[in-house]
Length: 176
Image 1 (tube, rainbow, N blue to C red):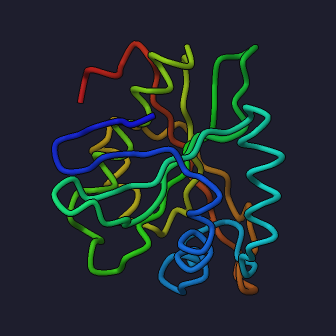
Image 2 (cartoon, rainbow, N blue to C red; image 1 turned 180 degrees about the horizontal axis):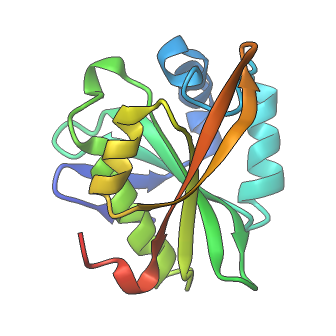
């Protein structure tokens, strides 16, 4: 499967992408923005493929620059709830020189459209550390709105962190 945007293409993630995923997720600039901070391993990623991707509980794509085909990151929908028609959104740009270029916003729009149209979802939500202003702004530009704040919900590197829940709904997909 291939989802095509203006400047990027999303291709289905496969086992052959494991080394890139692990490399990206273990870079400090990526890991420090994730709720899960532990080092990422090939074994852990293959377990994710077996338990989440192959069972249909998640879908994951590789983000590629359209003009070069270069891999720059990944985007996914996880914990797909086919009863309540919702899933959790996740993304990371793994190449530091590609941050701030609008690729994340475009990937978010492509995968949420896929979730609404192909998976029949009504709600796609995310959790973000409140101090991650860059991500929050990108998510807002991609059509997500803030739903709530959980005070001191996580302890990351010994510090209490607030989490913000954001969501995008199927009926709103064309608004932004």
